[in-house]
Length: 163
Image 1 (cartoon, one colour):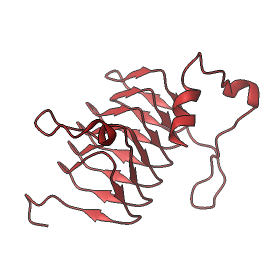
Image 2 (cartoon, helix red, strand yellow):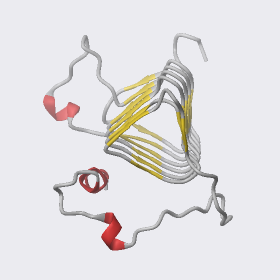
Image 3 (spheres, one colour):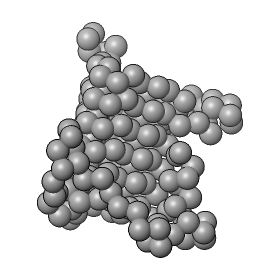
């Protein structure tokens, strides 16, 4: 699933969604309705990505797919990821090589799917993706590496803040 979405973003992949007549499902919580236009802020940078109506983008989005109502905070980075309906990614957060389900909250400066220079795992671990389940709440500053699964409605808190 992840690889097909990434292939769709590459002009030389042969997948041309425009030719297929693919349309985004604009419904949320079982309600069908239009979304406002996407708002791209002055600090936003978008490269090789697709996004639906109702998104608010103030950070960087590269090689990613954003569903309706996704909010990307100022200074946040979303790279090689698929983000579903009404997910909010806080200011300064980083999401890489991940699939984030609907209505997820990722707190400011949280990091999902990243590796740090002092913690380089074997190559097979670097190749994986992380998946965050529907309705999960990731606290500010939390680090979640690659190849991780966070279950729906989970509340992930940092061990630093004791919660």
